[in-house]
Length: 296
Image: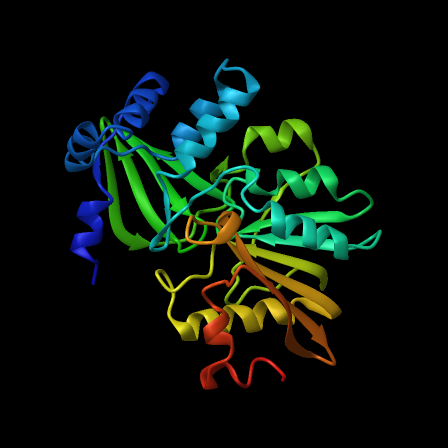
């Protein structure tokens, strides 16, 4: 049965206009106008990404606006937060472990700008960008457009001046259009870069990775301990023997605004190799519930 509350929260007046988008984002910066904008349930459809991509804005402004727009959209129950240069400590530690020819996978990259540092500095390595959703697919009909989310299969409909979350699901038909979620800053600097769909809980990578980075995804606000354990186990399965998984988080409660830990894989098992600034999941890693995930 459709979740009526979710349908109502994800539906509302819609105007996919660049000037209106910038006005809306500016309104979110002020507490009073933010309250009004959220109360009106103003929405944007995935078409707004192509509006930003086609704009004549300078490259840096276009990239920043694309990322801010991404933050308005949800993947499952979590908003798709993104920003460039968020994890400098983790990136430096990961790159120090990278050998020429290494496959580096970053998961949960949203629009990909968080991985620009790795793409720029990982010389001689292959960097694969992944997220649960790489694009929106769409089909047109008489008075609107139907969108298919790539992560959970949810279907929404854009009508004149209104965006409707149907509460249903479905697969995009063959020949459906595609709206990429890769930031234009990434494609302009790295024309060969692409965003691959990958579910950290159950997905399989094209091949085993030497290094995996999972940034600002796994936390107990969005996921249960059981789900976090499942994700760590699946990411570990995607590593080569001798590979490393870097799990990091960025917020103001940590020194330097960042914390991470490293799980190394040897003999098919994971073990904690290093940690910096006390990531909130460290307590879970040492709990009985996670005992069969990590070797002593």
